[in-house]
Every structure is written in C-alpha cells, then in structure tokens.
Amino acid sequence: MLCQICGKNDATVEFTEIINEEVKQLQLCDACAKKKGVEMEQHFSIADFLASISDAGSADPDAAADGGAPLRCKKCGMTFGEFQKIGKFGCGDCYLAFRKSLLPLIKRIHGSTRHTGKTKDPEAPGLRQTLQRKLQRAIDTEEFEEAARLRDEIRDLEKDPGGK
Image (cartoon, rainbow, N blue to C red; front, side, top):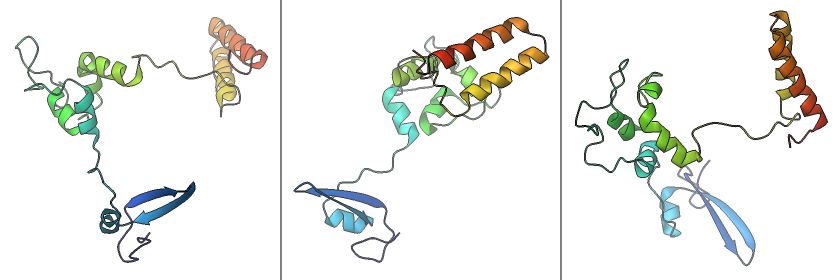
C-alpha cells in the first residue's frame, strides 16, 4: 500500500489520530510519519526482548555461575549467551540444554512454567471430537481405564459446558 499523504512511498506506519472523538487512520511512509511528528521505535527484536527480561545484563552471559564451562547445547554447540543475543535456538535440543536457565525466564513471562490451558469449552473447535477419537483409540487398544477416564471427561463437558 502506498503512503496516503505523498502517494509515492510504501506505507510502513499505521497512524491513528483522534480529534474531537473522531478516529482517523492513515497508512504513512517513514518520511511523512516523521513530518506528522510520529516518534518511531526501531524494529523490535525478540533478542532485545529476551535480554531485557532475562539476566542478560551480566558482563558475560556465557560465564557459568560456578566459573566452569559455559552452558552449551551438546548437539549444535550453541551457548546460552548466543541464544540471548539472537533470540533463536540452534536446534530442538537447546530447549533441554538450557532448561534450567529458561524456566525462570518462562515463569517471568507467563507467570508459570506449566501450561494448563484455558477452559474445557466443548464449543472450542475439535475438543469434543479429539476426546472421542482418543476414547475410540483407547477402546481399540483395550486400554479400558484410559477409556473410562475419557468417557467421564466427555460426560463432564456435556453436563457443564463452561468447564466450571
């Protein structure tokens, strides 16, 4: 989309102006946004975010607390300090390698280190169908205790649609 003021440059800023309770939205290029007095942040990076909320402010993020070798993924060789700088893991094994350092960070972001979901809403796309498929699989594999548990969970959903 082109800038709605100059009509020449690509719009990179969405500008919302409210005057006398009238909302006006404009798509602007950087130059026109600056002329309008819009202060723009530089591009946000996940690495900057992680550094701001983790203990990345230390002089050497790779320095081990006990003075030993830095925390490093055995599979790809990435260090925790490198992860903090770029905001991406080198491989799937990094999650396990950096687990102890990640848990406080995850708790700070989400408030918990355990995902509990939101609600057992039977109207949620596929929840009831997923439970019924699991129930059928449990019956087929003769896992009757699991089948009974799933049956009860489906009944509970049907009785109490709000998951309360």
